[in-house]
Length: 341
Ligand code: NAD
Ligand code: ZN
Image (cartoon, rainbow, N blue to C red; front, side, top):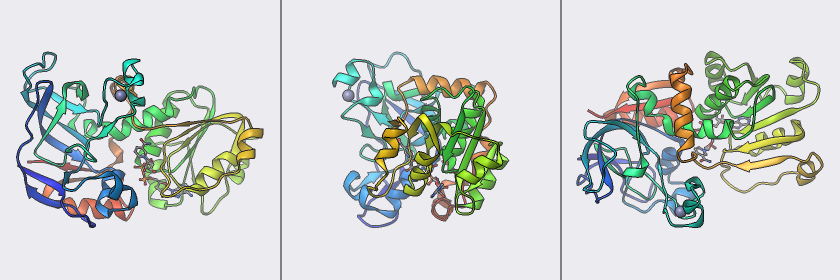
């Protein structure tokens, strides 16, 4: 089969012929229909410090996908051939304390699909049956193909109660925009999203996020005054991984505010811990999706009318993958969804 492989320890991905994955008794084989590019894939493309440590070479990349089951392992009973599915990209061990307590998203031994387990930029992907999520007929392929990042957004935005709260989202990347939309749908009073890239802010505005702020041009204090906020944000969703955005958030949270932090900073950075203490802030790190509570919630949100399709700015064939990565790297894309023939 054809697959996009990290085959050399240097920037780039290469389309190669590789064997179709073999499946174990509890695995399924899925024919990939659509696969989307994640920021993680861009890190792997760039071969940055994180990916050099995390990704063994060669490795089939990609983890955001939708496809169809074509083969079942002998012990798989709850799925069927021909079923349309997506899949959870974190493969957990099942035997650590958190796994055994039903908290799979907190597993200590997580493997990442497309990171250290062969991924979805391929004609076929093999996954453990427990990772497979059937997709209802009324959800289109390209939306199912972005359920992984949508799940990051849902997990983050629903970490704290947003009803009647003022919510700050830093970073209007695809995940930040989806997080803001989920907070709004969950009943936030005011929702503000920041970015420094006007293309991303325009996309947020077009998608219906209530207030957009260019953090390079206006301070959040000025924004708060402009929109009639007198105290501070009750809930913060950090979706940029940018240290200045994290500090802006701490500065503008109300006392007792709750922050859910998804954005990954390229290197460690300092914050003023005394502000965290004297403001009595709650800070929660978010990694991935809750298994599988987040998946139930996101399917229900889409079926209930939350439309995130406007985030897909590029729909391309897999042979144009270089064009897709270029749009991700220069920040002009929302989501890029690639078709496998
Ligand atoms: P993205 O890179 O597309 O979006 C980040 C946005 O932050 C960009 O639009 C960028 O312009 C903006 N930004 C940069 N500096 C800023 C500043 N000072 N103030 C406000 N915004 C600023 O990423 P994404 O795919 O939307 O993902 C969001 C973040 O979450 C990334 O850091 C990503 O690495 C991380 N992530 C974490 C997990 C997890 O499980 N924890 C999963 C997926 C992604
Ligand atoms: Zn575990």
